[in-house]
Image (cartoon, rainbow, N blue to C red; front, side, top):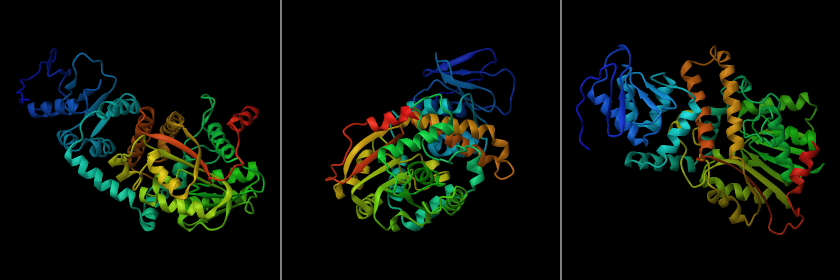
Length: 433
């Protein structure tokens, strides 16, 4: 398609080319965007599938798909930001939003959902394919040292930061469960822990090992509410210290033990194995090793549960999120997860997808994050705060749009016949609570 030459647009007229409309602003807002700037903006809008959004340049000119009412506006605040978006929109969008070189007017999560939906069907560039292969290799082959570094990057930035927007009951940084959509975040996180415990069919006196325990909320809950004995492993120092303090405060030191160590070093024999929110951090090529660990520690009639962010098919994480927020993260497909179970002949009992529950959880987190944003400003700069806001909003969009999933997989050994005949135990008790 030929590159077109543009004449100046008057303040009271609109021009349409290639199905894209240019609207002039009322009044001069800065240096004018030239013909090349507007041409690049139109190409960028076409590249992402002509979604119903407006791109507003730094001189106030808006470029939108013709005949479509924009639901949000992406403000591009300078020429360099436009060029960076054109070169690598996936990575540079996050960079530029963090530094306020671009901004979104309207609902950020909804804007991103629209973009994800339209760009999903666009062909991938050679550059992005090469980068994806390199990123997949790094994410799938994580050493213990690299895993520790990644966890510290994300989780050891301060408990106070997370306390501002997670639930106040148990500091759960994983998907909540909303059997009643009107539940508060605190109620839904308690419901999630009950849901997990019922799936594991916990009984007083049983032994449970937890791989990756966050701030310890689930382990403490299992010990207090179901009378089991828990050993929980985690390599985040700040989280383990917090978890131990909560166990002391609740007089549960003899029932739940928090161990600052990697899941690879789990020892002992247990009635139950549980991992909530760890799998996406360990690397796909370590799944076989995780399966061997489960096989080593799970008793013959034992039951296990793995709760993880996932994909419908193998796919890398967004490059900006992987670089700035979640280094090394690689949400698996169900097919990839089978590398844990199949080599050890572990039998799948139940798979549940809580995708929409995670979208609702994230909306609660984002609302609390926004309400408490002034509390962070004495500890973090504006770019950090905007990066995390973008991460939370983008995650809402990903779960609503179906590009991300939330799997809970329950499993046991193949000869364990002491199994429930139905799922009634999951919901009959729930109705009584």
